[in-house]
Length: 562
Image (cartoon, rainbow, N blue to C red; front, side, top):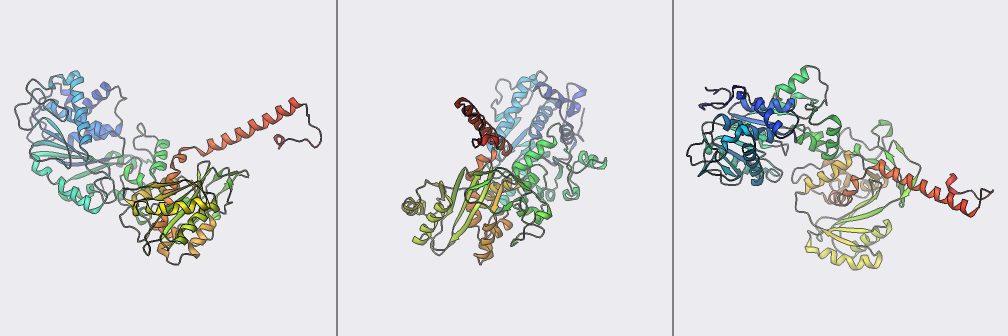
């Protein structure tokens, strides 16, 4: 029997059970074996596309949908129907490809229906390259795993599974993406005549290599996590399953696979990833507009005059036009600063203050600084600026005086400059003026991506509060717009070299990153804990008064009554 149109041109297939001619039935058995719930509708839809898709296909599905597991089961199904196939699994990292082949081998070893496919005596039997029992002699194993930078040539394959060959590490720059595009061209040298290449992927950048594949004859099918606002952005590549949901009246934002990720779950992930990260990782949208390409928005901030020692115990963000502030605006069209919708009357002292410094050489960039305070999960930007004197006496003393003025209890310094020389110059002056701990930090990742990945989630959650005076001074005291913090916030993208100057934004990201762990603390919970502490204190005062027999005579009112 042949199912050439459904699987592989020129491939003979002899399934043990006619029911298993449909891969979806086999997928159900695999999920049952793994003690998982039945496959979701999206997983079944991907399974059908794997079975009946074209020879060159790309599956883009949101992160966490299980596309690698479904495809691993597909490899088992291929070998069940035709043990003579040679299949190569390629990933960006060798260990990921190895994990795919190891999982496939375990399914063969554990499922009774696949028992006859276990490697026999004299056959290859490792997790990264193994044969199936009925396979004939061949220079190429039945299943082989390799990293995209490894030795692709030397083997032959009927099917190549390219599982996440694009990653942040190999697609960060144009040069990296071009190199990756050249590497995947080698698939054609490995593929047997009439063979099939299947990409599984999630775009990592707006300029993903997956977008180039249609030029090479590939068909792309996309399953986003939600019904998109503008389906036309996907250029006809949305899976028919999703298109049918849209045609049947599903509203924008409806989860495509609610059994996998319900709406609240997706909201939490969007808050964590940030809007642009979520657009790539979950919505598979690489056609970001100018508004989306610039991930940091002023409207996500809260702006208000801040007390140097205390802040409200709780704030509520607002995007209401009535809450807009008339402040210098260097953002994109339509953006604006807003004051909070509501602040509690109760004021608390900040629980910490950190000063971040990015040194510069004399006559080069500014020595930039940012001072950020923390309270109940909110971060308060109380100072930002820069010194042009490099590492001169005036700069070092000025930084020390700022640390003292704002009560900084820690200073963090970018150590990439001068191998820590700046820190050694700063220490004696700081210890003389304001004794505080100084810590060096080093960064090795791409600066623009690091800044956006740090600030975007915090701003999306409306946890960053600016002192109104910081924004006013940033505009008044900095003549060059490209050196203004607010200009840098509005213009940063994840592209390398996005800004000519980014010193002030970089130190702000350093300070926010320092407080990142506290962001996990739920602000409502923190407020409740504080109120509970006040109640406990009031009860203790009341009991103490009773024990002293003080009573409630005139003039002896206790704070617990307030």
